[in-house]
Image (cartoon, rainbow, N blue to C red; front, side, top):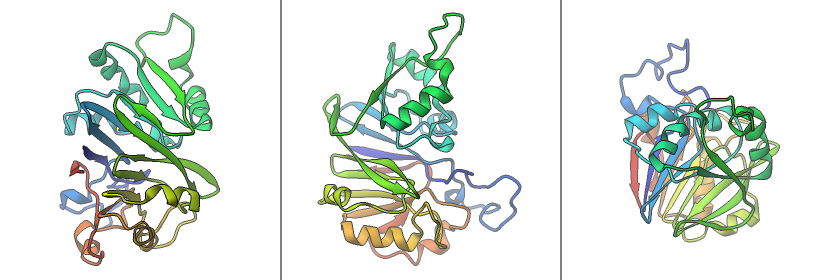
Length: 252
């Protein structure tokens, strides 16, 4: 199985519009971050996690030629607003793409993108999607996916365990019942917004502490802001923990 970090940035992306800080103006390519998303490739199937605002650019940059299913973590704009770009993958797949998420997330997707699900036949080319509510483990082809809830501020959102890997983006806490599903991980991808604390996101230190409790073989920190310098801040991370970068490929 392989996991590709399509984007590792927070909702603004990096560089941030109008910002001239040292990281936004950095020439280090790994400080350029599109909005958070990932692609899991296993059993001949491509599973996309979130349709980030930058989906088209990410797909071209990483030569993504097929999407067989989509997993939605939650309905915030940076995680769903690239949904219209799934049209191209419908053509390749020659059929609808199943999209999995919580009842609340799918309700929001239907509302925000009502043109996709409208019965009005006048509407032209639009994604062909099948929304599937999930609250327990399920399979995409031969790949088992286990959704579990984490805290994103005051709201519960979904994270996913796919075989030996877990993907957690926007997160400020992991309930005990979800922590129990994370034993024996080969890979943990987890959000770490910045050094300073935030009410709805783990800081770097908090994400590292969560990793210590979960004890995976490898931890990759994602959903990074323009306060994080890949090289400078990366030097202080403990063994087995590293920052994500756009286009990072991880074999599991």
